[in-house]
Image (cartoon, rainbow, N blue to C red; front, side, top):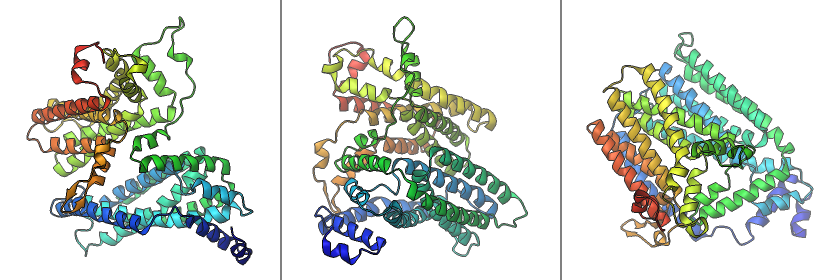
Amino acid sequence: MRTDSATAVEADPGARVRAVRHLHAHRGDRATVRDRAYTVYLTVVLAAVYVVPVVLLVNGTKALVRLESAEAVTPVACLAAAVAVWGAQLTGRFWGPLVLKPFLLHVFMGTDLSPTHYLGTIARRRLTYAGLGTLLAVCTAGFLLTDLFDDPGSALLPQGVAVAAGIGAVAPVAWLWGQARTVRENVLLALATAAAAFVLVLLGRSAHLGGNGPWLVAAVLAAAAAALGRSAFRSVRTVDLARLARESARAAEAQTFAWTGTLHHALDLYRPQPRGLASALTRPDGRLRGHLAQGAVRALRTRGRALAAAVSLAAGGAVLTLGVAEPDSGRATLYRLAGAVAVYAGSGWVGEAWRGLRDELTLAPLYGGRWGGLPARTLAWPVTAVTVAVGSASGVTAAARWPLDGGPAAAALLVTASVALVLGARFLREMKTDLPVELLLPVVTPLGDLSALRVFVWQFDGLVVVLAGVLVMNGMPSAPVAALTATAATVWCVRAGLRRTGRPLRSLLTGPGRA
């Protein structure tokens, strides 16, 4: 800090924080006017090409979730609020509002300022932006998925806006709570959120509130935001600065990877480290255990991921079955999309077999050129785990939902085809290596250069395949035709994934052979 600026603000900690940030922002590496203009231009193109057509299409079709009364709004509001709080907590554990640029954090830690002054000031501004973004996202989701905003004169409209404002207030606070508090306290908050949502759903469905259930939900969210915010900001002064420095360094490295086009490398930095059970991979006589046993042991070495995978796969299988058996086409589409996305996420959390397969396929000189039994050896665990978890949840849901619309055979065929599509999309995503250079070539259109859109689709190709495939399957006239469509998409995903590794498809089909 320069002497003149330091003496001018010596007595005011807040002004000193602003001075340090001002000097850091003028080091010469901040975004230029051209960079900001390109960001605005790309945002406008994305909105014109993707957002506006979707909004116009949704505005002219039937809403996926119909909210005809306050009793119907209350459960949806409670579910949305609970998911927002849990998602904010989980995000805070990995990338919270207190994460700064490593150099800036190092400068602040080298001063006599307390963490409350510089971390608290930065957290307030970021939570304000996060609150506005959450409010906009919730309102947009309500407009696209529900009929809450169809009638401007409806009495449910102000209640829905109040609930959205409550979610926009409590989610950023939960984001700070997730980073500033311990794991045990975060688990307690998650359980308390689930209990409060359950109680509010019961009260909202009762006749005692007289249709004021959404107002009660909004009031509870506002009270929770005030209480959690007060407690979370008090915890800022007790933050472990050494751990925050490590988190900031990892976040800076991940941001560099993401900006250079290798998003999967950025995500690899946040993979949990395996712990324990190393000796369980071998039998007492020293030989390795079977493929399934090895995969199960490796999955249990990261217990958090294994638990998340089990919950996601079970929930995805249940919701996917509900979508297959739902007579309402709007809700069926929503359920099938949500279920397929949950299964897609869980399929990547069951273990590290996908990455092991990619490494063995792309590093043939290191691991050897023969690979006839490689897919069976590495994919035995993830395919079996996904199939068993989804199949068990689907069977329980089908028994509870019996009889199924369209018959049990058609439902089983659609669920199986959806799972196969998800596994193919996961294979396509995990065989990804570095960003292909040809994606950076300009794509000249009347709307301008759309090469950035190609990079965006490449980053999320697995998710794009799942969403597009489920929508296409949902538009097919019969279950066999939908299953054939999913099978064709799965074969294409496997072929495209092998091409990314440089391996031909025939070597997978013909057994051992030279790479």
